Length: 332
Ligand code: ASN
Ligand code: ZN
Ligand code: CA
Image 1: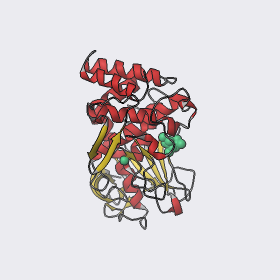
Image 2: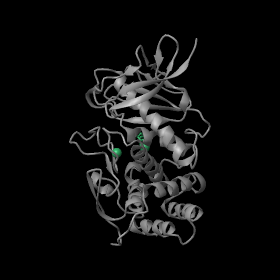
Image 3: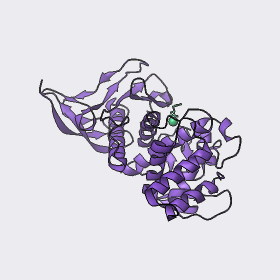
């Protein structure tokens, strides 16, 4: 069998029209990308186990942009994996989730009416449910980036998934998932500091989470308190999501890509952001060099300050901004 990289076109549910690197066997195209560690996407056909069936196509034009074609969600998943791969490689020099050049595979159409998506280290794979009424797959870019970043965290800091370390684990996924969305800058999925804004998981058009003011979701913490570690990890993450927003963008009112934000600080301080790219470098270095399985919020402050010192110098504007942003979320 001869195989060769080919350039296909995809029409996803959320991502719109995108190019896809696929594999031509000589008789059919496979949704498999040898240029990114062999990442591929399979169809679970509503099953909840097994590796699924690799998507194939006769003309290398994948999906029709609607749920009527099972390949549409696969386009989102395959593109989300590709852009996550490119983001980590080009931003941090990380060669895949384990930094070993091996791509993860993705499974779509998991179960029925399953309103979640998850990373699983044991299969080294990403899985997406089809959401409410089995017709709203959770294949948005920030979800792809979020879930695959759980794989990066598991293979680096290994933050325990409970208490404050669990909140930091979740926030790492929201932060990097959001950075993946900004990296992609997809025409139909404009980057923002909202999580899952296109999926309509709440049924009322609101996103799942807000990084500028996490409490807007009704459960997340805006600021650290001594009891924050007893919240669900998707709520205690708010403190670090808010820290990252303040560090990157600063406090107060701001509009980005047509979305309005208004980020408060615990101490009433006015903060100026250092930009997303520097904030992401600081977080990634802290995650991969300083954080451990038991890092809590106080340790995250120390770890990110050490990372900022390494990257920009002690007493740099970036170092001082890290300190000020943590104080802005009551981590002192
Ligand atoms: N989608 C969820 C998350 O990434 C799955 C889970 O509960 N781990 O947080
Ligand atoms: Zn998560
Ligand atoms: Ca988003």
